[in-house]
Length: 281
Ligand code: DO4
Ligand code: MG
Image (cartoon, rainbow, N blue to C red; front, top):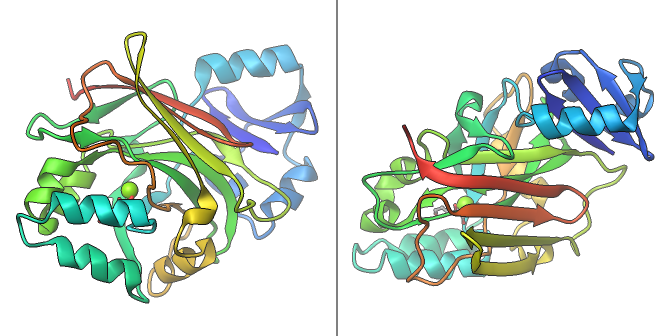
């Protein structure tokens, strides 16, 4: 099942039918067994498919209300190698190597909800950065008890020039206005997402495809429950949290995003997160 947050209410797509609820998003999603609760349709009323699709198309919002957004890093070999390469002049390369092998994963704070873009909204690149990339990442919704209840698509927009200059600049490379995108919906399967799931990304510059790639999430070094467990070790999230799980799709080093590029990230069974790239007005 899929849950869309919109300006007109929360729309549930379940077994080919659509349902709407005006409940608060935080209360609705922070459940011990979210799939079972939503399948009971307790908070929902039936809505015609045409009307539901039109609301989703015209009024969609990112699937987040009060949750913090966190991110994991260097969870795929490709990310480790790219980071070691970009930071070799600063002497920071060895830290990426170590964190890839270490028991403790790299976890960092990514965004407050008001900075998150939904599908169809703009993401930003920094004016003080010369090398900018999107990072397509499977993103977990973890409830307040620390259990993974749903999945969405994340874009961890990043400045490689700022991170490469000095790893201590990571928060500036990663956290700024509209540097995170989430959407289009929460995907809530009965059982955990399968490792064979594909994540793909296409970057369009006008009509031209300037990057295209796809990977399976089974290439990730760590398990999803391991990442969630570390995030919740000493930190409470009263309404749950979102956790981006790291990137494996890294464009070649001569690639940087341009204004008006469109980044489309798709994950099987979830959909497509589409964002235009621009500068903060
Ligand atoms: O180590 C810096 C960030 C890594 C990251 O965002 C990723 O691997 O996706
Ligand atoms: Mg990332």
